[in-house]
Image (cartoon, rainbow, N blue to C red):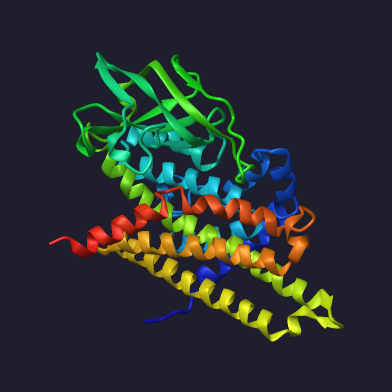
Length: 379
């Protein structure tokens, strides 16, 4: 058991940190306040290889592993969790096309996705099927060499802005085996969008409903065979959960560092508040819990890289624990800032707003417990 990173891992961890501090950190507050989708910065991230981290090199990716991705996402999120999380979504869609698509599909879509010339959205959640994703109602009826797609997806990152929508739709009967995966390109007739959602956080990425009304999608845009879509979606989410957990690590780490600095600067009762033992203990607990979460994330990423049978459970454990810890650390950091933590002059409140949704998306933390318990009790 070796807990040391390789020289290569340390190098791209450092590269991600340097990039994020230079390109994301100075603008993150403005992106949040003005609800800006930072296209240029995202494309700069893609030029560093961050849009296709675990896509194969022959298809334009970096060819790295899930642990490598976790290291990168922690650094990106330490500057801007919202923007880092959108890059995670781009990675997930690219990986699904790379892993399960045909050679023609890879050649058609991946070159512009890996450079972020084109942006991607992952469309699974529906107004009536969030946690119960396998009950989705969006339907694709075969009509010659096309599908007629009808239904809607909710809370879609990139909705109305993305160029590619990877959509899970029902082509067969009830349950997960009736679901297929279709790529819907922007400007397809019948593709529409709801209003841009007003959100607590994640304001550097647009979120909207995606609506299909007799949307004609070529059969050639189906990823894999009919009935395989839900399997692909769940495999994508294993990695997505690790990525979002790593984003929580990065955001929480930034909050912890901000609290440490503030406690040395802020004076009450004639001395820095960092000299009060009660507050030192709180800081120590924050650091300890964050490190425990980091080890769980790294272990889950390693298991996914190794193809372990319990990788799905490990990813669920890491996501549940790290996103809870991440939000709690941000909340404690805000408390340590007192009233200053609640105003936008200080960055902690932005991190707190961005990290809160990590406990909900990629499967709620309640569903993570369902996954863990199911794996523990199956015969």
